[in-house]
Length: 378
Image (cartoon, rainbow, N blue to C red; front, side, top):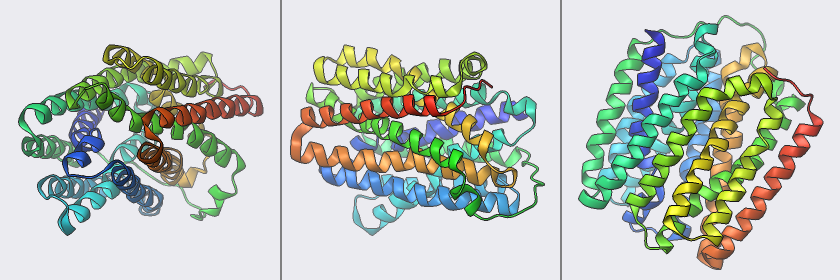
C-alpha cells in the first residue's frame, strides 16, 4: 500500500507541476516577457526554490519529519500556482510566481528523501517509484502543450489544481518517516566534508550544461516554426525515455560504478546541442530527446546515491536537499540566466555554441571525478 501511495503521489505531483514548470518559457512569453526578462525570472523562480531547499531539509531533520513539511508545501504550491496563472503581471502575479517557485522546488526532493529514508524494501524501489514522476511529467507536458495551443491558458488552472489535490490527499494518508538519529545539527559537518563538496561541484557543472540546453530548446523549436505542441511532444519523449533509466539505473550501478556512469550525461547533452545547432529539424530534435535516458535520470540517481554514501546519519534530509539545491537548482539559475543573456545579445546560434562548450567542460569534470574517486559499485 505504501509503495502504491508513493506512485500516485509522484504521478500527480509531477503531472500538476509540469503544467507550469514544464512550460515556463511559453508561460512567461504568454505573460508578455522578453527573452532576457524570461531568463531572469526563471533564475529568480529557481533561486526561490534554492532558498527553500537549503532550509527545509534542516527543518525535516530537526523536527524528525518529512510528511509535516511536504503536506503544507503541497497546499501552498497549489494556491500560489493558481494565482500565477490567473493574474497577469502585477504584485499578485509576482507574489504567486515566486512563492510557487519556493515551495514547488521542495516537492520532488522531499518525496525522494522520504523514500531514501524509508525501510530497505521501499528504498530499493526508489528508481521504480520515481519513474512514476516521469510518467506524470510526460503526460502533463504533452496534454498541456495541446491545451495551450488550442484552448489557451485559462483551462490549465483546472488541470493544475485537480492533479495537486490528488497528491495532497495521498500525502495525508502516507505514514511519516521514523527519524531517531541524535548528534550535532551543524551545517559545518557538510561544508567541511570534502567528498560531499566534490560530488556536488561535479554535478553542478554537468547540470549547468543540461539545464542550459533545456532553456535553449524552446527558442530552437520556435526558430524552425514550432510551437508549444511541438515542445510538449519533445518533453513527452524525454520523460518516457527517463523511465527506462530510472528503473534500470540501480541494477546498472551494481555492475558499473556511479562515477563512470555519470560521464555519459554531459556527452549526451553535447550531442543534443549539436543536433539543435547542425540539424534544425523538428524530427531530428524529437529523436535527440531519446538521449534524455542518459541525462537527468543518471544525474538524479547517481547524485542521490553518492550523497547518501557520504552524508552524516543525522543530516540525511539536509544533505540530500542541500546537495540537490546546489547542483540542480543552482544549475538552473546559472543556465537560465546565461542562456537568456546570450540569446538577447548574441542570438541563438552563438548561444548554442557557448553552451556546447559548457557541456564539454562537464565531460572533462566527470572524467576527472572518475579518476579521483575509488571505483565502487553499489
